[in-house]
Length: 213
Image (cartoon, rainbow, N blue to C red; front, side, top):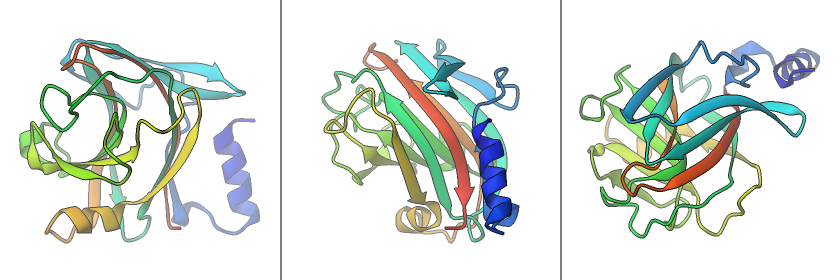
């Protein structure tokens, strides 16, 4: 049974249904038709694969940078927590990921405000699997400045080929890093990129949703 169906059944039995969670993707749709593919340089290869009895998103990138983007409006006062699972199978050889030359990550998840994608027109938080920065370290994106904040959720000490499940209070993170009182986000993006340092990455994403708790 697909994971989303199991979550719906659990939700019904516990009397905590759709008002408390918004599912972005369990990647059970192999066409990815509800995501837009946006390229910055060449294309990361995104495809649905079967892994460990579930369908997940696989991302392969070699000297490329492109994202999958979904336009979706989320009320962070109702569902402030972003939940997801991810793993990386290759680490990047990056020495300074806070520079333009090192701004590559095996796995990223963007949360975007104002429904615009270009860095100079928007505000965003970028949760990354860091190459060296310690966990919970935050810094301004070297290309976009303070309009896009990077937050290290995982780092070099975490295992490769191992699934990690994350939960972030997005409302708190936005309040911590932006002066504005932000209530809504307008889009979410997934990105595995290796263009600046011409590296190679293999990563996986699964079970992305927002929740009340």
